[in-house]
Amino acid sequence: MYLSKTEAAVLPSTLPRTRTRPPAPAPEQPTKRRLWPLLGPAFVAAVAYVDPGNFATNFAGGASFGYTLLWVIVAANLMAMLIQTLTAKLGLATGRDLATCCRERLPRPVVWGLWGQAEAVAIATDLAEIVGGAVALNLLFGVPLPVGGVITAIVAFVLLAAQSRGHRPFERVIAGLLLVIGLGFGYTLVNSGVDPGGVASGMVPSFAGTDSLLLATGILGATVMPHVIYVHSALTPGRYGDAVTAGRSRAGRGRLLRAQRIDVLLAMGLAGLVNAAMLVIAAQLFTGDAEITSLESVHAGLGDQLGTGAALAFALALLASGFAASSVGTHAGQVVMAGFLRRHIPVLTRRLITLAPALLVLGLGGDPTTALVWSQVVLSFGIPFALVPLLWLTSRKDLMGGWVNRRATTLAGSLVAALIIGLNGYLLVDVVLG
Image (cartoon, rainbow, N blue to C red):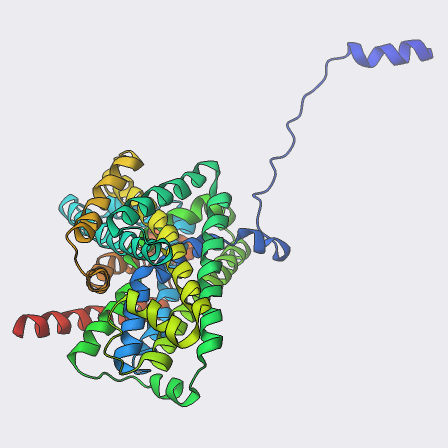
């Protein structure tokens, strides 16, 4: 039977068609060429590692004890790299943040206790950032400290609004402010010079009495920030897409882990260099100078010894630090409350609550630098309450699956936690006894 061309053209349209669903695309996994676009979350966390509290503790450490505490900054930065890698991995493996995982796995009284201390840490964090921004505005423009605190809070709130447009705009803004901080201290370091012998001696672990131990604890609290342990785990799931699906294979896990490790290495490395530069500048210029007791005196001292450019670079870096770190701190507070309690409060309300202690300190005429140093000590005491649950969760095979910690990783994290707890305990006993 033969069909004409017309019949052959019409016939297919009259026959029933079988619809076939196209195969589902494989989960998109980052290739080597696409690792760089995945960077970003660690840079948001890194800003908290160079907040105004770091300015106070690092310059105080360098001016009081020279290069002696440089090793503390290096050790704290290595600890920070390990901790931020673990918290990012928790977010990748579970698709949930640390606070949420604690709520799902721990007894209710423990959860409430962890939430309470996390809120105390958030208040101490905000105090440091608001006070730092206020001091910077006062140095640059002569703005009264209480007014500067309000301005810092408002600007941080505006910066946080960038997150409503997605992760990338917020990350770019924060990374830009981090670059401002780095350039400011890079410029000052070049002008101040470095003593290689002093740097070498500062890498040998040692203390110079109880006062140096107090500052070392403050440096540790200012470098290993407990609130960003929570916030980093909340940034990675959305930033890396469906990481739980992509990471089911060994190759997928390897690519994602490589991306976040590069992210942490670059971001924490930059933060570590900035922190070290602060202490080196102070040790090089101000060792033994009894007049260098505050951020204002550091600003004046830089102007006297290196000129107006160095003083301006310091003030601008301090301002960028206050603005950026305050916005990250507010976001961390939201993550903590949502994770532990499944509750959300308006960001403006949270901003007002955490702003009150900082404005009280500024309004009563308290010394901003002293408040900054003690806020970092409070943060140091908060580290174990975030770090211990993080280690416990990331070592659980039933939760992490193929992402679970290796024994060596858990051991290293446990040693870090033991060191921090021991240092805090020694400091507490020393302060109580006299």
